[in-house]
Amino acid sequence: MSSHVDAPRSRAAIRKILPVLLVLVTLLSIRVLTLMFMRAHLHDPAWFQTGSYAKFDRQARDILDGKQRVFFIDDPTRTDLVQYPPAFPTFVAVIYGVTGERSPYVVQLVQWTIDLVLSLFLIAGMTVTAFGWRAGIAAGFLVALSPLFAMYAAYPSADAPAMWFVLAGNWLLLLAAKRNNVWLALGAGALLGIACWTRVNPLYLAVGWAIVMLILRVTWRRRLAMSAAVLLATALVISPIVVRNYLTFPDFTPTGGTIGVNLWEGLGETELGRQHGFRVNDAELIEHERIKMGWPADKYFESQWPDGIRRDQERTRESLAFIKQRPVWFARTMVRRMWGMLKVAGDPVPYSGISGFNVTSRKCLPPAWQGGAVGFGVNFLGMIQSVARYLFLPLAAFGIYVAARRDVIVTLVFLVTVLYYLVPGTVGHAEIRYMLPMHGVLTVFAAVAVDRILQIVIR
Image (cartoon, rainbow, N blue to C red; front, side, top):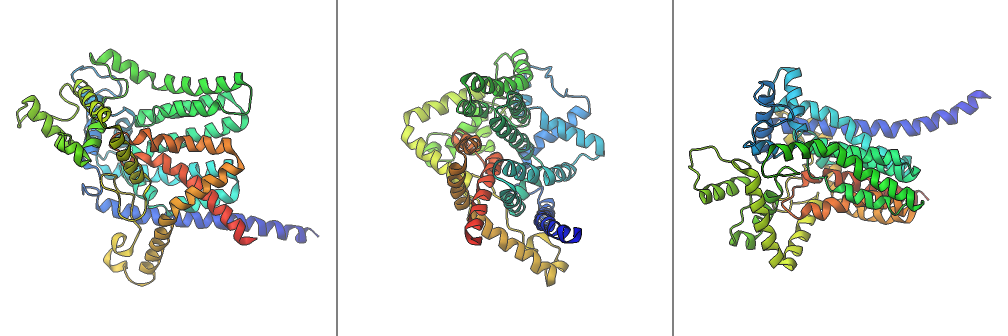
């Protein structure tokens, strides 16, 4: 009798385990192939932000050599040290110190390994919590096939680590909304604050998350407590950086002094902006300001030094004045920029950055392996990736509709993160790598759509 009972259980277990194994095999295959390509192109500025990494590398080396402190800044003229939050340079320094190798390749490998687990766990876990196991499996496949996540997992920068903490915070926020739990809301805010130690971009997302807590179907007292918990936890976690900047620099900057750069270069992306003197990238901006300040060409000069905070405040004032005079034009510019942040298939929108690539045997394998069964398998994976890329946005849009019909509150808990990155996140210059948390949440919605379509087809 027991054998008759055990057989259905075994078949049910296999039906659950097999999709998980297929997700893991797909994920590992595409991630390894993408890593191989990126390791060969890590010194190619067309594929990797070598200039940005050089700044992290310099700070990490200075930390290890005792020339720079991990957190405190002793010299108030070193405004370049406030350009980025301290977590990622410290992360790089720790990797250098532990491995004894000071190169982007070792940082790449460590970050790739961590992301291999975390990106899948976080996105699939959020989906299972909100919409069930089948949707979670669909999310796992979408993460595994995503060229965007695969590329930036192999991209040694602060973008993927910031995504980990934002998505983890959004997961806790979802649990807080489901359980009406103030402590979980506090944890969500704390994780968002940690994300800001890595990248400053998600800082004001705390406001959006706090607003979502106000629409829960509980008493106003509990809503206010949960909303305040999100804001308080975020503020407490980021407060050491704010206090440090206040005590160190005569020109106070709470967020690092890069708002002006993003606004200025965002205007420089447009023809009208360039006609009025705005510049499209750091090199052109630096040369413009060097000439403006009369700084000798043979002396060190960059966007955040010397006097970087004050210069950035001036960029902000000039950019906002220009925008204020042309609000309708700027709104159209933002819409085009938003499309660039969403577009993961076809040719990228100019200045939006690379959304990854489909794996192919020619790109990812040595010549001896490019033919035969291995080459065919890699090319087949790339074709599946291509289909998934073109279907992604329609699926995400349909998924938002399906999710809203199931649970409006849960949908809004996710959707506020998408809207934050999509609207205020595109006021200045933006790249798709800044938007990884948004694409993580959109993957949840796309998975809901896949689940719903399969339900219709199976019936």
